[in-house]
Amino acid sequence: MMKKRKILALILAMSLVLSLSLTGCQSVSNSSNSSKNSNSSETKKLVVLFPGSTPKDLTEVNTALSNYVKDKINATVELRPIDWGNYKDKLNLMFASGEEFDVLWTASWQNYGDEVSSGKIIPLDSLVDQYGQGIKTVLDPAVVKGGEVNGKVYAVTTNKEFASAKGITMRKELVDKYKFDLTKIKTLADMTPILETIKKNEAGVTPLQVQKNDSPLTSIIGGELESVGESSGLEVLRRADKNTTVLNEIATPEYMNYAKLMHQWYQAGYINQDATTISDNNNVAVKNGKAFAYDISLKPGIESQEAKNTGTTMVTVQLTEPYQATGDTMSSMLAIPKNSKNPELAMKFINLMFTDKYVLNTVDFGLAGKDYVKKSEGIIDYPSGVTATTVPYNINSSWMFGNQMISYLWPDQPADLWKQYNEFNSKAEKSKALGFTFDPTKVSNEVTALSNVTAQYSPGIVTGAEDPEVQIPKYLDALKAAGIDKTIKEVQSQLDAWSKTNK
Image 1 (cartoon, rainbow, N blue to C red):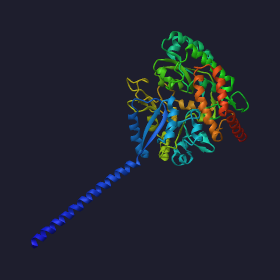
Image 2: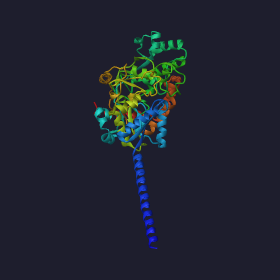
Image 3: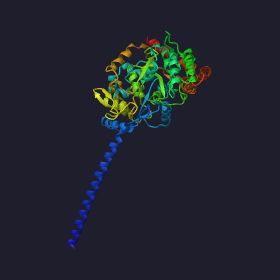
Image 4: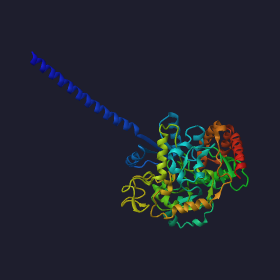
């Protein structure tokens, strides 16, 4: 009996040890799983939205970028380009649905004013102070305030050129083929015989590629009229005037004259007939061999940039003088939407695009060895057998992101390009309203209504598809009903108040 009790006790003891051992193992396992889950939950994904086409190997670039950024700020990154023509509408849908994303590209000429006034993007002052120290060392304090509205900064300006000149860029092989004398092109109308020659002699090639968001009318007119108002750009100053009288752009003779020229060209077949509906960037048609020319904002190195975009050598004609307005310091910015659940991480990533060459150049140009190869320090080229038209990652929009001055250069770009940028900025004519930013809060309802009217009438006019002598009077009536007079009065009031303290 005693022996049986000892055996039973031994069995119970062994069972207890085994039970404790298993419990311990389970505890360690649970602890390990908990640790893994904890680490996983700490690594957030940042979604970055910007306009552009989707490259073939975007997923591979996102993976490489995420692996690098994860070690820097414990976050992964998804670059998510959206076609230019759909960018504004897609963003508005995402804002309305509450879909989460973390960084968006914006601009004074895109939808920045509406994004601020409607609370779609958040103030960044404290985030820049805490997590954007690199930004503050790169950008001039005055430029940091470029995205300021009502004393608050809502977007971080890209460090690039801060002035603009307008012109037309063309395929060089066709310019050479027909011996076009570009020195004779002084005005937009001077392009007519060139476009006519292309129409008559180059079957299947559109002389001038246009779309509703990118037209010579909206571009070249900027050499005469400066937008100072809400996001539709309807409220303008005449650059040649010494005063700061705010005008309705659509009511100016300049707008009517350019609109008539565009309509003449459209009727003559010089402009692509799908201009009002197409969403591709204008350079895509040239890249596909289907177009000859399109309008462009000029800056040092622009021909090299457009050669990368189109896969062919481009030449340009300048139609307006370099000019610096507030909109130029806000012409490319990064903001953080209200939809973001990780604004601190978003600002850390924006900061990396100002300070980290690997991050910025991966966003700009993709993967070393596949999308580009280093030729020397700071100089890159396409790998053997790869061209601008076949490279699998072709965002080629370094002007959109962070600190462009640490972007790699290509062999056909001057080694002192960034110095040329600084000279370009310093020599440009300065706007009478440089530094003024309109706050649309008091006329937010009118701004929305005006935007809707513009969306209805502008595409047909700026592309030349509709007769401006018929449509512009209708456009003006609709603008008046939507509150253009009240909005102009508010812009004038704010500009006058600003001018008193900024002479």
